[in-house]
Length: 196
Image 1: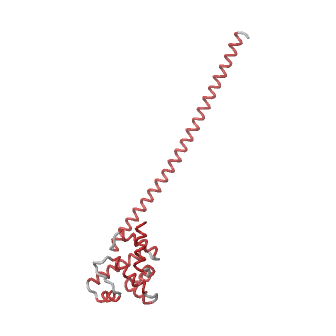
Image 2: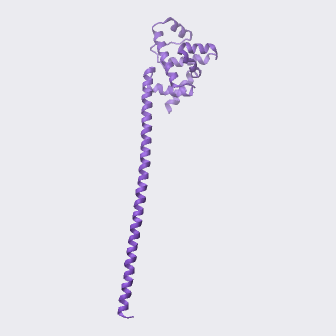
Image 3: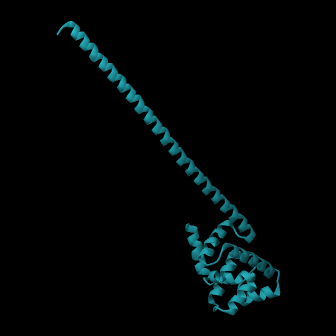
């Protein structure tokens, strides 16, 4: 082999090496662009997922705040604490009534307590017949539990319905399933609500 052949052979091999290296570099650049594009797309997807998660958390937080506000306002209108109202909400659901009906009943019972304390003869006689002290100084929830014990012992029928309506107005009949549970069951529901 002559020197010229060796030089040509080396140049050819060097040329192949350079072109292979260029090709490898181009392939590397192309792969890096694909990886970069994939990373950007993954980042966008993760960002969207985080945005959706944050939006869902914000909606849940707003719902919780709105519920707390509603409970606070309802508790004020019923004359009970928010804690008592939370318990009543659970008890209402378990007692086949709704919070609005129960809220109306508490408002009417508070009004009866004031009338009882002011010596209203009809109200005093009504609660006296049931052997319940409805003095305004007593917690309305305690008076409601005493009423529940009375309703638990009464037979179902016209007398029970008439008493419920006399105490709570036309929505009183809807309270009978709640009141039929008695004070002990209502206390159990209160304890269940406290554990939640």
